[in-house]
Image 1 (cartoon, rainbow, N blue to C red):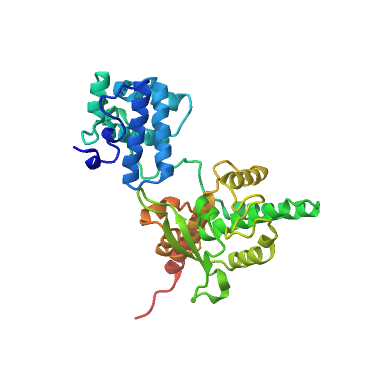
Image 2 (image 1 turned 90 degrees about the horizontal axis):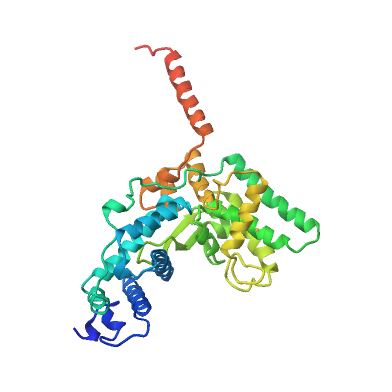
Length: 372
């Protein structure tokens, strides 16, 4: 087979046959990773996904203290035990690591890429698959999120937003210029909840990502939020969707932000909806730090994170009687079962529902029978 006809990631594209190497172990391993990278690029996987997978494989290689052509299932077992017992990683993370190592081993043992033959020729041994059903975690449950993760209650959410607003007033009252970032983050948090957005979806919003809804003229220029950086599937670009505005207060705060406050930022010349003081767009660390500071100041538990805004959006719409199909479309879930995972109706809501059902039953039982 000629070099031009080799599959992306093949050994023949990354190593010259019979050429002596100064550090054969390290150089072959590096070439193997480069080949795997090209194979994944050919599958249209995201760069971030590929880089994360390479880090995982390198981490396992460091723990095993050897190279892929001498790996064994026992080495994987030891690594998994260390990650779980010492570092306390979650089950889903461990299973993801196992999947990455399995994928890498599948690549190295596939005859189409020639790495097994290359290793046999150079080292007298070859890679094998070390991840099997009998030593890998099984994905049993559809939802494996941390049980502590939950939505805000209505009272908690109101307290959080009130606290965020109070910080703007306090900082501005002291004459400090930090009130601008505080104002930005208060509106950012409310927007994430108002449209049920994920963290990256919120961060990547631009000023042009809003429009009018002909069926909701009362929302003005903020009747629809167009998401361009939705959660992508493997090998696919970011998923787009549109979210209709359901609360009038969300349109009001966005209008105030865009017209009165955002222009005060020195970096407001870009299209980013949430500029930073020194860069065009706010970073994840800024979002996370502010959220955690407000949560902790209110004495709320760590089960609440930024994604809780999205959980709360789904839960509160369902509690308020919105159609489940409408909620599913709003948050961009392909399946209703996914939306159901997010729905954590409060005990108060269930109590009210039960009370209404019992009252209706009693009323029907006590109502005089109709005469024929």
